[in-house]
Length: 114
Image 1 (cartoon, helix red, strand yellow):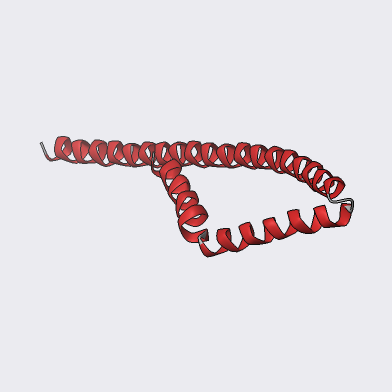
Image 2: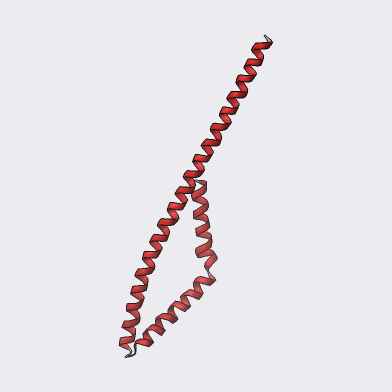
């Protein structure tokens, strides 16, 4: 009887160890999946932002040349477009926490928790 109890305890400890190892492996796999999903989302976001920035730059150059040609001085067009972006930059800087930091933080947390 004592031998049987010891055997059951040994079996229980072995199964508990196996269960713990399985849970650790499952946690590793879940973490790897979440990290890879987050990184792939960030990479795709960076690619989209880069393409939009290139298109925006080309349009900005076109607008600057167009304004400059209407004013008979190309430099004026670039100064006007630059001044516009300067004002937009100040507005974005002042609102950076609510427009950029918080949504980006929420996105990352959402991807990690999901």
